[in-house]
Image 1 (cartoon, rainbow, N blue to C red):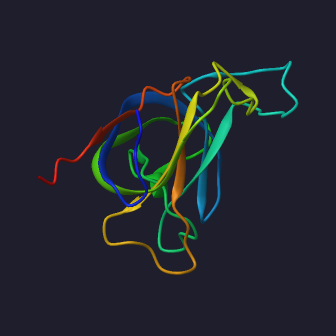
Image 2: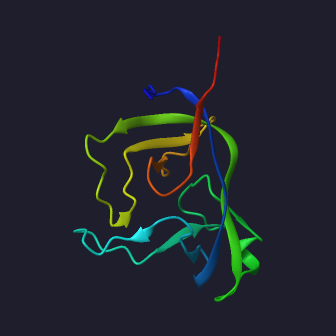
Image 3: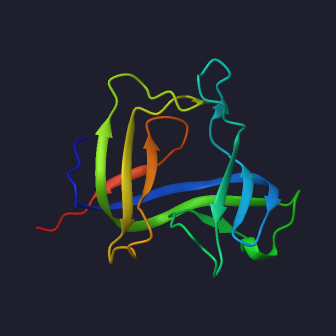
Length: 144
């Protein structure tokens, strides 16, 4: 797959079940439903992921947490997904060897995406890792 910068794509990921391990006014941290920590890796990942939410959101991600993170408490079960979303590509790169990021299976590509209407200057796109643990689908939008 070769995806050009500024191309439009539809990104999706089916729901995965997660358990809430921490809640703050800006993030809900969950056990990540995809992949396992790779203890042989140079990076140490503890199997969790912090997802921003609410008015105090300081970063953008395409993930959806259900139910609403504002009502979640430590120990609750939720789902994490990416509903089919039309996004713009910031960059796309394939890795000659799977990228060692601290989890297994390791991803074989990365794609930076952002909403169609862009983000404020203080925000960056979100990098999604492909070909590894997360069952993310990326479909080019035919503008023809």
